[in-house]
Length: 535
Image (cartoon, rainbow, N blue to C red; front, top):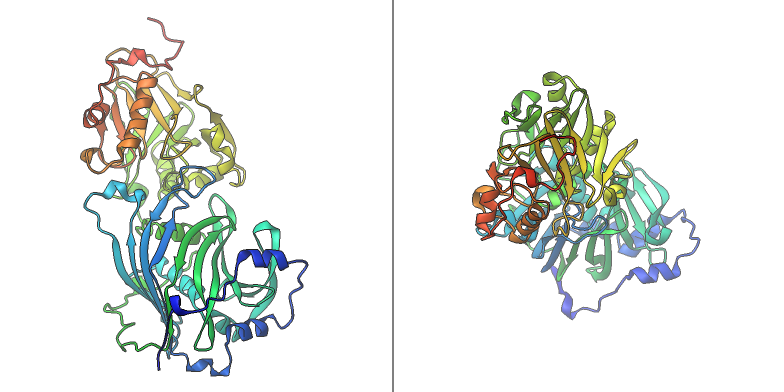
């Protein structure tokens, strides 16, 4: 018989973070920690009668760790409103999970509006030898199977039946909590030392920027449902400080009436759909998936690049891009002895290095990410590994400080970074007051000694997202930041726009789309011209 509890009628047993902090001293890890945890949850020999558990809530919100404005904040919203229902089945054939989720998308997705509808979808996940996540294939499926274990209210029971070790785990404030670790799942369960209810379910990742990292599902506000203690409030917290997801359940039930077909998958599973675990990709896949930005594993090769030197008055300036709507355009600056790469999307970093080796044959000595957002900067470690220097605003250096062996060349507002050859001069400018990212920068490239008829390029990421749809699919506040910077530094009105995303364009299109009357600046009006040119 189903037991369904509407939480507004319940007396909620709250587990607050403050109670843990007040009671925690030098707690030893008890030898019977697992037994205490099982007893606290209500798991015993009778737990086998639990056929399913359903957790449903109307408050689902997520923040983005990969597209923050501040370098050390969580100020970018992916899902400002939503709801989800998570259902677990404990029948034969292993654990099964179904997620039914409705997620309204926030400002991160402004480039896709105005026609974009909320995400409304269902996913079925199964573990064991036939593990799968329908209808997602490969690397994401493996990530989702691990995630399904983290949300499982009976996870402690599964761990107790296998091989586990006792440990202590650090949370915020350098507090140590007793924990059990399951090597096969790579999951730790941290316990409240007073109640011995689970406090956090922790997995471990090697993040390209943050290094060894913890990914916690914090659980609290427990209620008793049919003899089981089940949390009502869930938070995903990264490295004990970055709150990513907040989910509050309104209803929890045990042994609901579930149709036999509820967990069925309508597609055949082929060989390409077998879940694959790649520890090097776990952090990357997880944060992309949380932002609905995972497009699958990058499978292009160096032969797939479209690379051109299209500007006759600036030899050595390459524009290079992979095919596909989700690809990123980059610029390569070839000097006599080395190459400078502009922007650093992680998917193609290693392939780009191979392309440079084959087609230019010079080392990549510098990498310049346009800003710290991970789709434009997670490739930086790949360049650092081969000895490249990272060119960034001085105020952003701390963000990249955990990359092993990283060396930096920095610049500031009013003192841009310059790369110059006899053919061109590239100026990296830190944009003032950017509302997209505090370290947001653009590159202005022109001949080393220009004339008023010279080509001028503006290389930009994310101020302009879709130049072909200026009126509807761009944030005009962000466009204003770019336009204001161009006017301040007296960039030529005739400048061409080379955006990371979307189609090639020119700055006049930007000005016209905004109703902006731009000064009639010429290339020789630019604020940061070389002093070594003669008339």
